Image (cartoon, rainbow, N blue to C red; front, side, top):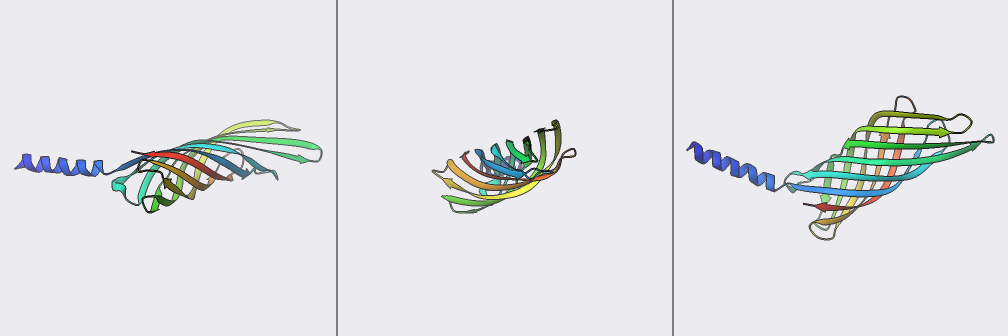
Length: 182
């Protein structure tokens, strides 16, 4: 009897493991932010990779996002030009709520994690600094499925990035990516 119960339990647990969906998405796009202590709207680009798993193909997915952001801006005030450039590595947990049908799935997502960044400011006085801090925010978008495994995704994301040495700021990103579900 114990043997039958153990075999049945192992079989039932393995069914739920087979029913999870895994997804990998690589995306890139346009980023912009206002750099603190300046009137500069910095622009640049972002690349991002996301691994997600969706337990039993439901409406909620859990993801890990790792990316790189590079933005720069120029402030030409009082005959002195100051150039600011920021590079950041945001790494965060990205829970996602999915809705829609098999061809088009909309989503809203959160972001909660950490970022490592580098600031370089040149002008009358030049400075350079490395820092790390909290990352949090959210986004929304849609995935368009070509077939049951391959999809195109587009999203807008707004992330708050804090740093202890230089100021905090909101990073906006509009991106497009290609993903695979397995």
